[in-house]
Image (tube, rainbow, N blue to C red; front, side, top):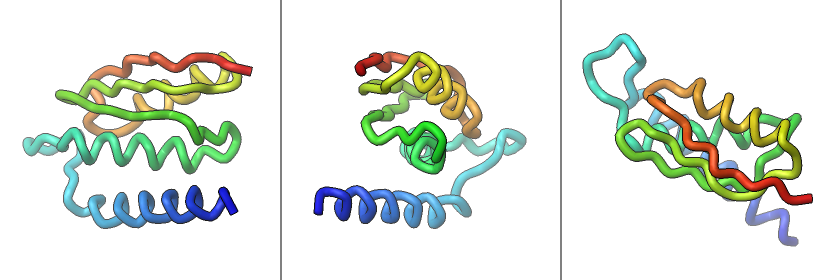
Length: 102
């Protein structure tokens, strides 16, 4: 039963991201991308990464600087999360504060 809220939350996030997709601008645009849009896009990218599965990562964005916090299982996952976050339009920098916990 604990899986159902995670699935519903993930689907809600992806639907919201899809709705905002038309509202955001790319790197070539003069309009800035909002911090909320960046955070949602990063979170969605992390959720979609089936190889690593990042259920416990918190994403906060301020002035395009993404702060990742939470727990991952390996250093490889920590690195992958930072890489994925850096690939999102509007991200200026990623502060990786993820902790490795087995």
